[in-house]
Image (cartoon, rainbow, N blue to C red; front, side, top):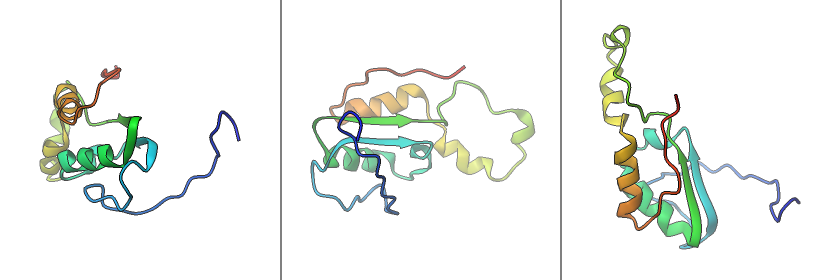
Length: 111
């Protein structure tokens, strides 16, 4: 155990829009490379807020936030249609946090 954290992780498959945990179950909730794939992000954020303890932290590393336009060579693929609904601006994601009473400590686009 280091800094009060046990290095045990339990992976559970669950719907992000309907988390099967009690309210305020976690000190920290985070998503890395998965939040953009959630159909109803607003509901998922509501659930993340619900299961996070007061004064807890929620973190999201969102790879689909971009200011870049879609490269022409990718526009021909049918799959791109579904990506359009996933692509969100940094501002959109921050507003989602603010809308749930959360503070954003840091937000940026990777270069």
